[in-house]
Image (cartoon, rainbow, N blue to C red; front, top):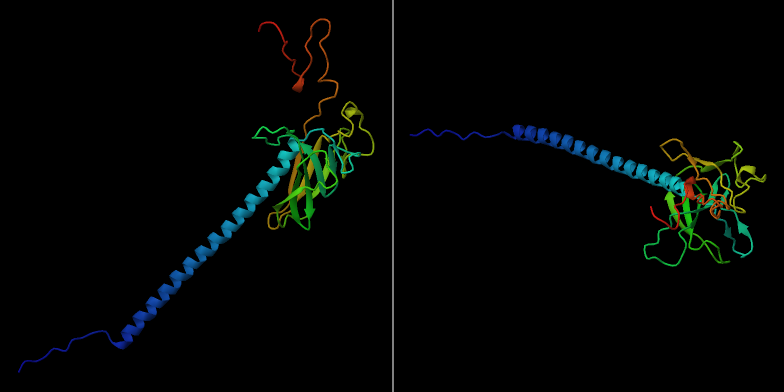
Length: 239
């Protein structure tokens, strides 16, 4: 008689051990992948937050650097509002750089405002400079959880103030247009959650004296001084 050799296989215990090892490895791999996914998600949130802070700071700096001594009429049509109005937690100013891609018949000066609305940094802009009674700014939230927003204003007398314009008239800007006084610099600071305090001091452009742009040539033909202190070229004649 032939002897049959019994086919040997894995026992039940061996199968259970193999399944347990596989389950442990799978759990470890899943935990690692989940940790990587959580880390990537947290990094993405932080990157978005950091980018939003950068945009808010850039917006403030850009508007301040483009400030112009252009007062505006209030909603009553009679009151002349200063070119820059500042408090400790709010700022309103006229700025250059209002884009006009369609070449519409309007100014390139824009009126903007920054406020702190319960910890949210908000930027508003007016569609017109000289307002009507129903003129309201278009609001846009720049940064949530921005912390307390604070402004300070550096006058030409070398003193910091918590409000602008000052009550005392600054003699060094006596030639500026009425209500067109601009501070030499503006400091703003706020402390977004998780990023500490952010502080910037932005130097504002010097206002052009009202009589400088309209100075006619003298008898000797000296050309008037233009923007930036550079003489303007003669209107006629060769190069």
